[in-house]
Length: 336
Ligand code: DP6
Image 1 (tube, rainbow, N blue to C red):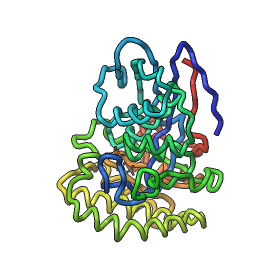
Image 2: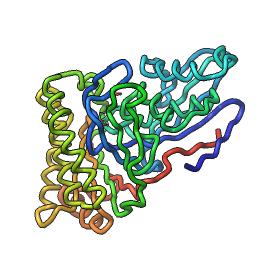
Image 3: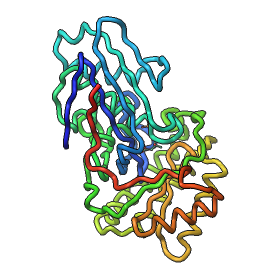
């Protein structure tokens, strides 16, 4: 992990990447500390593509949060992270007020995992400001208290968050560095930048019976098979499992009368199946939003992009966000 720390007059600025789950976290066994019903597996995306940048300043004024240039409320999830880090800092820091300024370089709350990068950056920045020197694993656990998916943004490459049944056991860790499978590519199509009407936090409280069935019966088998596909670099199975999992998530969500996918999302699903008709070369996955994340390999990216541009009648690549290799090193400190 390469870090350089720049501190200017007590301000710390950090950047954290988002991550996209191939096996999704959906449902909690403990809402107070965000213990998930099932383990999940994600890819950390290129920090230069989608990230949150957060500046933390300890001062004598008042606690303040500025989110995407607008004043915002310090919610319970943010307070949980602040309080946990306060319990680990030196007493002299406790008298200070906190100013948090945070910006996403991508749409917030549009199903693009902004809470993952947001809470990861907040946790990391606060730990630096409070001079709390703990491991990445411990920081990831604190970020989980703010938002479950944030725990996975502390590591690069392919990451597993094991559900666990306590704060100490619910931990994320890197399964593979990017170099394990450096042909993998991730493409994002922005179909809708609107803020979602119902948050993941609220939607995952609905339809408990179906959530439990999914978490206990279907997800464990998929995790096992996905790990085998990752180990063997078996793209066909990776793709099949990824799409099956995304469809399963949205089947459960829609059974609770919530819909995140739109007509464009459905069209893109069909286009990917069409592209795969001669052999599986791409896979879609959707989080709690309509924007598809598409996995493919380096050798197929040009064909895939042409297929999408022609089929969606898009004129340029500007409407498609193309990710390069996924980084190993998710955090970068910036000078303020
Ligand atoms: C669909 O991490 O946003 O993106 O823990 O309540 O903050 P909270 O939920 P959050 O849920 C993410 C759900 C998901 C799947 C995933 O990222 O695994």
